[in-house]
Length: 126
Image (cartoon, rainbow, N blue to C red; front, side, top):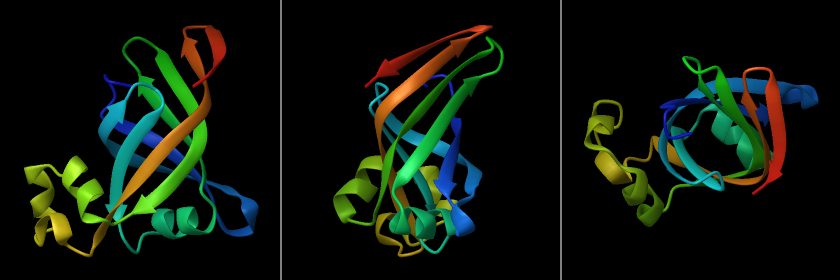
């Protein structure tokens, strides 16, 4: 996870079909927690507000390794969480800074996962 700046995040979309989007990882704590950002009015944010079930996949293509995590995403807009993930370069997208209403945090908590390296994989609990 630490080598992946981007992750694929899956949500439950219209009609119950999975939706996959690329997001940038802002922070992570082991395999249990990860934080991403998105626009407050994005489809991702709306989908997670309706149904918090999520799948997150981190890929290290050079090593052909990946970790898939399943769990729940909470959409957060409180000042403390925003301050926790804020990076100065985000101001080009959110000029209002930490408290710009146009962005939110996707706070992911993993429940279980699967690690893949080459042709081998292993399931694990978080």
